[in-house]
Image (cartoon, rainbow, N blue to C red):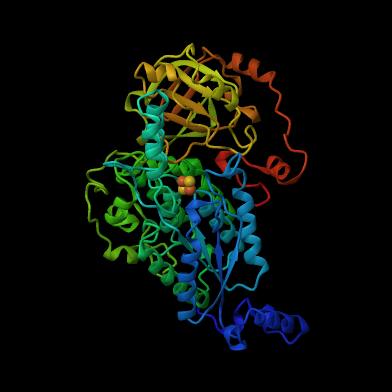
Length: 563
Ligand code: FES
C-alpha cells in the first residue's frame, strides 16, 4: 500500500518534538545539509562494500555516486555507509568464515540507522549473499546493485576467464609447458579492470540469482563493471528505491517461495556455481522459507542448462551480457518460472520479461536445444553423504559421472598440499581423491579447498580429471568431477571421517548417489572411535562461528540468525 510521509521510519529519528530529534537534525546539518533536505523525504542508505582490499568492489564508490544521483532525482535523501567487505583472493583463511559477520553488519547497520530504504552495492562472491541475508532480516525496502564483471581477460590472441583459465594455465606452467615469461604476461592480462570474475563463478551466479529473485532491476547482473550502462542502471536503481519506500515494497514481499523457486531454476539454467546452493539456503532461512536441497535437485531435473559460459561452457560474462543477460535467459525458460512473482520494479517477472530477447544464440541456447538436458548442479545422497552433497555435473567429465574406484585419502588440506605433487603418489585414473576436514567446522570456515589440484603424476600421464570428494566448497570458476559440501562433514562425525585409502567409492550422478562401499557394521565400527576436533578458537568471532555454524544443507548460517 502506498504510504505517506507520516509513516516514514526515519521520522522516529528526525521528527519527534524531543531533544534527541533536535540533536539528530543538528548533527546531520553538521555535514552541510539544510533542513529542507531531510525533512519529509525518504532517507536511503547506500550500503557500500567498497574496499581497496577487494578489487572486485573497488569501483563501487563511483557506482554509489550514480545511485545517489538517482535518489536525489526521485526526491529521496541518500546517505552512503560502509560495511566490511570480503575480497575473495585476499582474505585468509576464507571469506566464507566472514559471510555471516558481513550479513550481521549489514542487518544491524540498516536496523540501527534512520533508513527508509537501502541500496545494496556488492560484487565479489560473498558480498552479494551477505547483503541479501542482512537485508532479508532487516526487512526494510531494498534493491541490489552488483558491481558487474570485469573486462574479459586477455593473453596474446586468447580471451581468458578469471579462475577457470588461470587454473588450466597454471597446470601447464607447473608441468613446464609455459615459461616464466609467458606466465608473467598472463598475470598482467587476466584481470583487466575492477569488477568480479569474468566467468559464471559464484559472483556472476549470485548477481544473476539476485536478479531472478527479483531483488535487482532487470538486466542489472551482467553489465560489465566499466560499462557506462552500469552507472545508468545504478542511477535508475536509486530512483526506484525511493518509489519502493512509498510502496512499502520490502524484501519479504519480493523474496517469497515462488521467487526462490525461480532463482533456483535460473541457477540451474546458468550452470551456476555450487556455492549458490549454500547461499540461497541461507537467504531463505532468514525469511523462514523452507527451501531444501531437494528443491535444487527437482529444479535440476526439469531445467535445461542453456548458458554457454565458462566454466561449464565456452564464453565469458561480456558475451553473456551481449547475448541479453539474465532477462534473455529467463525468457527461454519462462515456462519453468512463476511469472507472477513480484520484483523490485513493482511489476511481475512475466511483465519484466516481455521485451527480453536473445541476441547471440551461441551464448544463450533455447530450452529446446540446450547444452545439457538437466541443470548445472545435481544433489547426491548415499552412505557417504546421508545429509547430501553437490556436484556440478555440467563442469564434470562425462566419463566419470558414473564411476567406481579406490579412495586415496588426504586427512586434511595441509596433507593434501604436501603430497599432491609428490612423484610417488600411488594414484591412477581410477582413483577417487578424498579430502577430509574442509567443512564449516573442520577447516574451519568452509573454504574453497574442494577443487583438489590434479596430482602431478596424473598430469604427467595425460590424465586431466579424476573424481574428487570432500566436505569443502570449491570456487565457482572451477571445473572437474568434484563432489562437494558432504553432509555431515567429517569433523561432525559424518561417514567421510571413516573413509580409508583403498576403500571403494561409487559415484552415480544419474542415480544421484555417492556411496562408501564398505559394510554397514564396518562403517559403524570405524565411526564409534570418532572424536570431534576441538574448537581451534578460544575467543572472539571465530568461537562464535564454531559454536553456531550450521551444516551446508542449512546454508551455513548461524543457528540463531535463521528465522
Ligand atoms: Fe571476487 Fe572472483 S575474486 S569474484
